Amino acid sequence: MQNIHISDLKDYVREEVTLRGWLFNKRSSGKIRFVILRDGTGYVQCVYFKPNVPEDAFEAADRLGQESSIEVTGIVKAEPRAPGGYELDARDLKVIHETHDYPITPKEHGIEFLLDHRHLWLRSKKQVAIMKVRHRIVKAIRDFFDNKGFTLLDTPILTPNAVEGTSTLFETEYFDLGKAYLTQSGQLYAEAGALALGKVYTFGPTFRAEKSKTRRHLTEFWMVEPEVAFADLNDDMDLAEEFLEYVVQTVLKDREEELKILERDISKLAQVKRPLPRISYDEAVEILKKNGVDFQWGEDFGGADETVISNQFEKPVMVHRYPAEVKAFYMKRDPENPKLALAVDVLAPEGYGEIIGGSEREDDLNVLLKRIEEHKLPQEAFEWYLDLRRYGSVPHAGFGLGLERTVSWICGLDHLREAIPFPRMIYRNTP
Ligand code: 4AD
Ligand code: MG
Image (cartoon, rainbow, N blue to C red; front, side, top):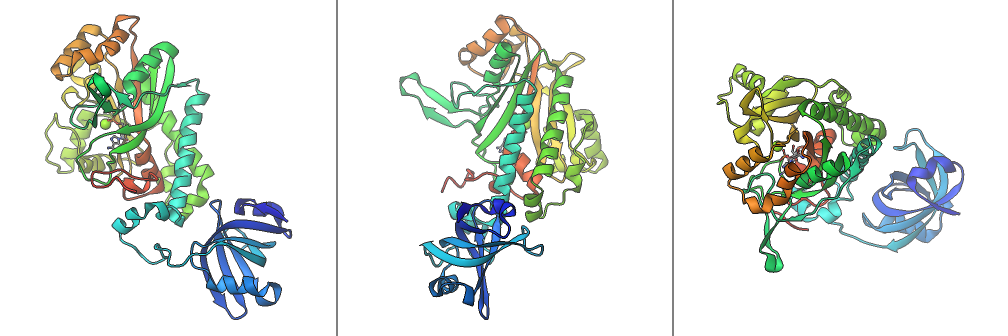
């Protein structure tokens, strides 16, 4: 008798095996008890036929509550009609921990109740599927950059300065050294890395004290940020589209089962292949006006604007050259029109909005000094960053992809809160 996982059943047809997991669901019919077992790798129906099993096992199959932990033994049968294609002709059942009144039942629950029970909600079929897709996305991200010769550079979370504006900083006291801030982005450090290693990426949690309560904002989210020396805005866009194609196509190939559980219509995702459409901010504004949106040149796009723009395209669209005023201090200006920043945002289709933000970086010391002053940032905190422009400055560019926005888009979720195991939002920091 062997302990195996549900995902291995295909290798044990007609053999007796033991599986350990949790009672997901059960039903009965005459002399038969059906127990659906889950073990994190899958689901399998175990059929308890009274004459074949010990009395206490049959009785337990009747009595146990949802999420009781159990060990089941039985003979593996190929069963094309069963989800997953296999069934267990059960011979025994051992109780590891009996439970009753599990709070999350197959009936509908309100979102606040589910979020309060997130530590248990994670066991639900849909949540398990989302976490598996998330994991595959993370691995695809790492594989993509690793295979292209990028070096992973982990950047600090406690930092002395802002990156993406001062209005969303989480602040903390740092011993005798004054204030420290939770990082909004690892980019500035990634730039130092790019000048040391050529091509780097940083991938970790980032923080924004977002006061907005939207389905696209978390206060703690994960971001991957590649940074490349000797790259301009076009190189940056080339990298972004190759990257997106790789991530989406890999997940479609490797997580078909999970996307089916999530009832994701994958026809749009299948189209995420190079080239992706590229339009300028000016052209995006034209699209808004043509669609009757009252929009002033110079503003940043809101969520609703992004949806109108991206609805014009089947694939993610890259919008480049934004008004510098609405973008971060470190972005290089367009030499053809200094009102514009050499920035790019990638907007996902189906109303998912901005998933990537990137740019070419200002590489001239004096211009950068001026920007720091214009943005009223404390120059002292940026001296180390300015050194990158004092010693062997080169053109360089990079971008940041929000992991949860990507998970949400690929899984077809309506809110970012299900795209991360334990979401942090303006009104929630538990469990
Ligand atoms: O556009 P953002 O602010 O760009 C940066 O942070 C740059 N430093 C990146 C770079 O060039 N290295 O953020 C990048 C992405 C967004 O496109 C979005 O996907 C995600 O991070 N993001 C958020 N995701 C969830 N909740 C939030 N509050 C987010 N803010 C940004
Ligand atoms: Mg952005």
